Length: 240
Image (cartoon, rainbow, N blue to C red; front, side, top):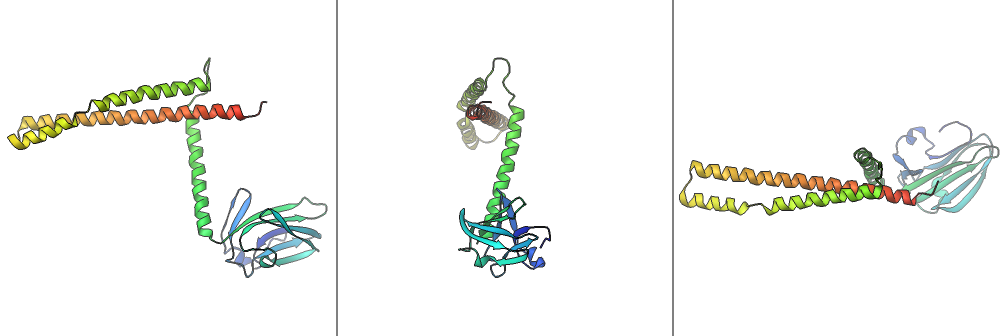
């Protein structure tokens, strides 16, 4: 354990054991598995001045301990009411700023860590999306507003989806089916092969254009929503 002045932490008295358990830090709290180390996990303190230790459990005051100068290892199991929950440690020493540490004690650490990593990934993905949209969506200029830019994007999406509708409405896949039937009935020939290949290529081109149009629609809608979100964020921000 560190020998710095006035230290408090949740740890194992054995320095080697201190490196044997996993944890992660999120939203000001350190999450660790408990009761994996319940038999010797301690509230460890190293005090060069006497002070008070305030223990909170799930946000409620639970215990206050007055401790003299020296090193202390207080068994966690003797100082909390349950095996898992949120633990707060606050060390108050006269003449020094209070030290506050917050922990989450969990029974299924692998599950907690997996969910944490999903949150980290989502946060990173959301940040990448935000930066991409900032680059793709310029700020209003001239007489433009966030509302007008959003409306323009929705108009563009509406026009594009209409073009997609016309493309899909012009598909004649059933004609190709008839070509197959004719080939079966009358026999294969170079001309019929050429007609079938040409029809398949034309159908593929129509579908490709339709898919490309749908991708454009999705992007326009995403941009429109981004401008709307920016407008709502501005409306909810306090006036400067």
